[in-house]
Image (cartoon, rainbow, N blue to C red; front, side, top):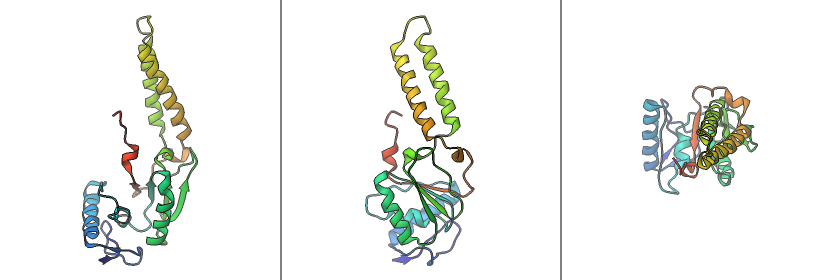
Length: 193
């Protein structure tokens, strides 16, 4: 296989990763890097066990701020894989507490479950507007609309949950060049969207 890493606008770097990429992985990294350089974001979806973790890590320039969002059961494996296959590229921080999220600085990797990712003030404000709308609809004509009242109650619970996830540090913009890798993204999809 090809040894090393391909990064956006960078040459192969054999010093920062200790894994041999198979030819199909090297092609995947090259394609991802090209998409990242033109679009600023990319999606890699493939079968289990083909090395998506390594391909994703290979696309992140050494020392670039990195957020890894994954299910709780995968935090340990991500930590171990980064330490084993990209030693010294990042100082790794695991965020386990609600409201404790912070954006990583250069040279840092933050590993977090999606439930611990911050809900920003703008999202909370949008929830407030939704609650007001549903509460107004619930009693608009003097009669109680139980469906609208239930939607308002649901939105109120969601707002309370979002407030617990707010983080002052997260309200600041992430450092330019911050990468976000989301593992098992299907777990976080909104089945009601």
